[in-house]
Image (cartoon, helix red, strand yellow):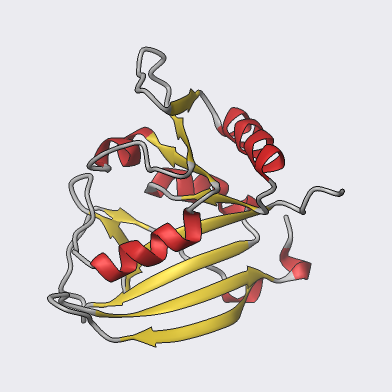
Length: 180
């Protein structure tokens, strides 16, 4: 049996102004989008930076292989694979994906990790929070060149329960002629 082709994806939520974080945390509370995040990442290897890892309230994220990139060699935590660089992270993720028959490696942040992995990404699962520019932050998702990406799905989602914002879930695939 042939192993499935591996797709490297970003799973990201951002405001209309590309804000993804403030003070090492999410500057919004959208439980229904966290369910979407879980659906997009469960069973898959996930790659994140150390600050993103530290912002998670109860790591590791269950049901996923958690791979954390950090230059701090003394950093450790149970159930987490720590690596020094992207090459090591992708090696670990590919090994896990092959062993478990999954077809995606999910990059989950933060800002620097998104930036350095964007040239490798073939798909983006993007949540855009419709905040009317009220959410402030200090971390941003990189700008996308619209010539490089094709929108394959778009779904408006109204705020649910006590959530403060509507959102849009968009999936982009990299255009074939935009491969790096």
